[in-house]
Image (tube, rainbow, N blue to C red; front, side):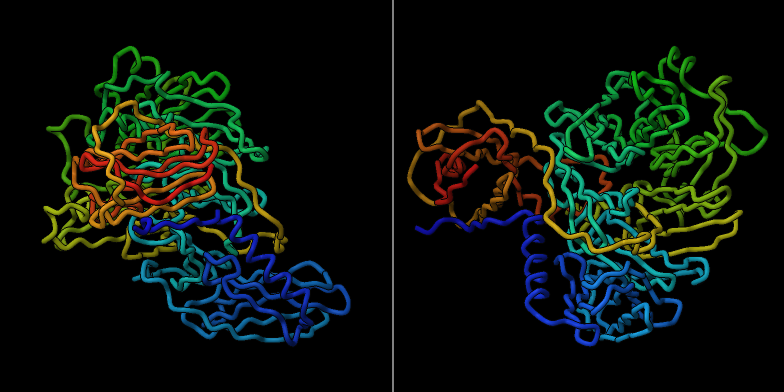
Length: 628
């Protein structure tokens, strides 16, 4: 009998090292000039609208790359420092287009090359509406990260896609002080969306580092002035999720410090309409404020933004509706609304930001818009908005000083995800990325979750994302795309003085040791292969193993690793359909809930193991061995 389908795949960092060494070897072996450069489209295999142009000049000279736009304002240019060997990353190509790239040397010599690109991947959402001017956007793109079947993508002033990645990179995309971007990996460790950690990468697609965390990564990260990184995570086997933050050493990937919100908050009070015991807080944002040396966290499932002392981890204050909280906490930590203007508390909020003057901005999703079930507001009569609060921590008062979105009603309503950005006084971004419709009407509940449920198979679900920028309350920019998009970030493709950074990337940190089960399932050893109806497969990565198969709901199954001495490690296969109260990123969900992934990290393993499956009260052979 043949073994089940299996493959070994290299880590993306090792794959990119091989690709880079190959095009550099080709460059060294040839004679490439300005008139005849070496051109590599999608050089790192994950960003199709990028290229690398390589050539030599007799003397050191600056070189400027100009990617010609379909119209003149769409030109994207960058000047590289003087050198004899020119290795120039090219960003901002159009898909399915004969792109013209002009190379101009400091002495005026130039050459124009043509690059034909492939059509857009079908999962890339095409903008349906864009309202702005090229003068306003300048050389910036608006980057949207995915919350459903979509990919991270960057749009120019005309709504044209000028960058995207073909990997399912998760959650927020942020630029680091060194110019690189930081984004969640596509390597799932736990449903619905927890991944191994973060990638530090360039827009070329080159990944410089993977930061792996034992508790995985979700939602948000914040780069400190010293380069170290605050990352949202959780204690993997604690029974709760999304309730911890850690500080990562950017050089080593070591965890330097951690904050556990269970230490300062009760888990069974004042829950939002989406709360359950497993996901009691649902932390979706982290912000460090240097002036107060404190951390702010957004807890969607308690309708609060909390602030902790950085050093001690003690609670400083809480922004949110105090209804349902213990009175002693209300008296000590909550704010009292003041001012003559309109005031609304936020509900199931996202993306808290501390402004230079100490004000707090956030995206108020408004989901349910009440603490008591009998007062919940239906989505069709609700609103979402960006809001700015002014707090006085001496008097413990709060005033609403600005908002945008309430006046747009249900059209702008997003029950989940979204963000705000502060650019300057009076200059803000408000991204409502989770808009959903069922049969043409505002969807009650979460469209992104209902679309996966069989009972709604006859409904037609559509999605929208509206990204706005305002300057002194004038709408300067509005982008709409037919998808749900987690967050929006406006960035230029090139950072100042960017060059091609070559060399092997690093894999830092560690994955957690996968928990075994002591339970033994009665099974007859038959020597048979795993039956075809399981459609089983095994993928071995450098640091873990993925077993995938089709199981009936509730089926008893275990995955076994058997070493050469007959020692057995048993791992549970969870075949019970899981219900989630929140789905901030649904890109990892499968259409068939019977399609089960089992991840076994190699941490703690050593040597060679035979992989076996217990199912149907039989011990099946896979014919596959793995090495740790």
